Image 1 (cartoon, rainbow, N blue to C red):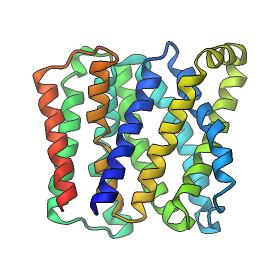
Image 2 (image 1 turned 90 degrees about the vertical axis):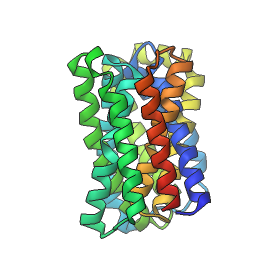
Image 3 (image 1 turned 180 degrees about the vertical axis):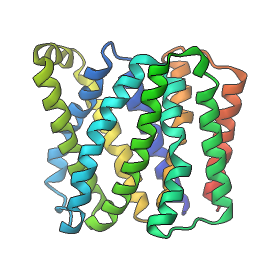
Length: 278
């Protein structure tokens, strides 16, 4: 993986942490999750005008991805409703990298070098230790939703990694996937409670725009990187978003870190370096 690709994946990881902070810091997690998607609905159409349509071969992957991402955003909201960001977020993201890499080997015949496997191990171990260190402080529901979403993340990573490669343009593929996902989730929220949602979004429209830009930018960078580097490596490096998320959780949400949690962050950082130099 080149330095430029690695740095852009890390930028995407930081953007991912920012929009998750936006959802977690809100008063209604489901409405704020939809608010981020509503923000993406505002910014995507003008951009898609200047991009080609994804190739027909990628359309089945695109359709499956939309369905998976609807579930993903709902589970994000439910997980944050029942747990702290510095526990739930790493649990959602932490179980995914190693499993993603193993499945990429099975389905796409992508075998990372030995140093990369070590990096993936460090990233996964560090992130999981962040989560497991706080499990005793939280109810089972938040942990359950987070673990369920970890499985969803594995599935959409593999689907979108292949879909972006077949699309002919990773940015166009990501844009259409995010737009269609947003239309589904926002439409569902408006049908359930349109008056409350509209009032909430009017008060927090700036958060929605910032969150929308971050989620589109984050995933666009990840899928673009997957067209240039192995899916497993990109997925593992992207999970360093937990480092940014933990720091933002401490600084913005005032969640208290422990020494074990800070050590786990260091382990994740070491894993990211190992992936880079592999």
